[in-house]
Image (cartoon, rainbow, N blue to C red; front, side):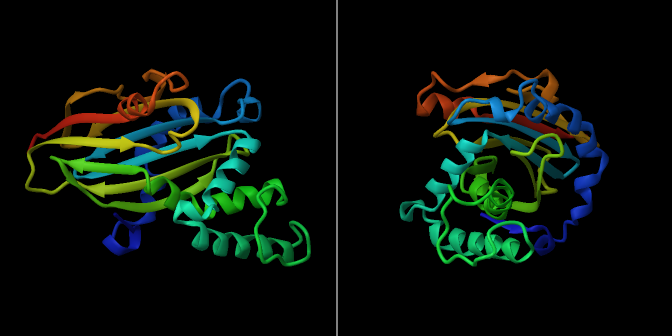
Length: 248
């Protein structure tokens, strides 16, 4: 489950805070590869997930990138009736494409059906950005002491480093009554694709990381190749587990 930042009183301004500035260089590992996403193979998704526990507020940032062919396949799958999001996504996507067409960013004719292979690269980016929150949230699960907690949607934006990469930001709260807790973040996003993933978690303020299965920052994290792993092994690999404590 999730809600927007305005619904729980958390402002969007934290996205530009020092918390994420300290992680930005690390996220370049995802979006600043030597070859770039255009040269990644088809059906390959590169992602990083960086988590910062700042006192009782937790900030989660996920960067995902792929080449253009893979993104068109992703959109095609999302539009399939079995996806569960096809109707809502197509409605949003058509609005995006037609709005851009009127702005001179594509074919000037309005369309009533979306063909992922017919829209231009800019439209593809904008359409994917429109539903990016939902696609990720369907496959992100956060539990605190085995109890699932809500994620707050904060922002999603195209990476400044690459045309086919996005950075999505979320947050959630840790109850004030807890002095020690177990945190699990299960990332099942895009596990149907081959690819690679990196994970990091750090704590600041009164929060302390007592134990963790990931590095404190992305640049020190292990890059996990998913190609030769089965579904269960991919799920285990893409899981952050940490024990946290508070000094007061």
